Image (cartoon, rainbow, N blue to C red; front, side, top):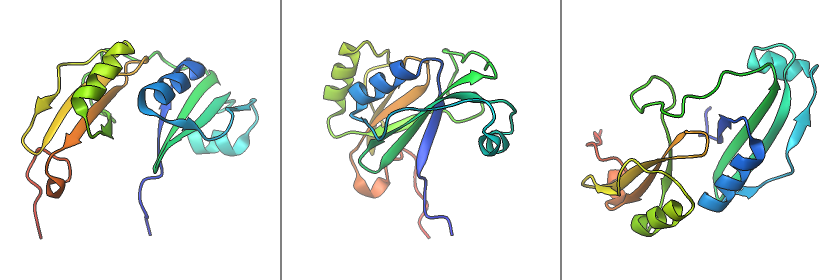
Length: 158
């Protein structure tokens, strides 16, 4: 039985920078100090499908949401495309539910976050996209209609 989603994971080239960003910008707390591993962790290599991995990992938490961050030292990863578009195949964004989207938008702009646009009304939600220091897209969303489940698209019933 699948109970739900436990965490979302991001890989970065600068673990400390990403920990600081998500803690300051979104109120995450570091669950435990970053864990470092050297090449030879056979179980982790099997899970990732790679050989000789090494790096550091951190788990952050904000209420019921966990965010896992990885910084691989080996093997070398390809650089992220900081201009990756929401239409490109793959995980496109993290969405943060807020109660004062205009206040959060202004606060995050003050931290240097770049947004695609000011918050936009989409019927049952107000939303905008921004980018973290590695260029990953996140969404700020304020739900106006709790029955709409936070989607600007009609939710089929039944």
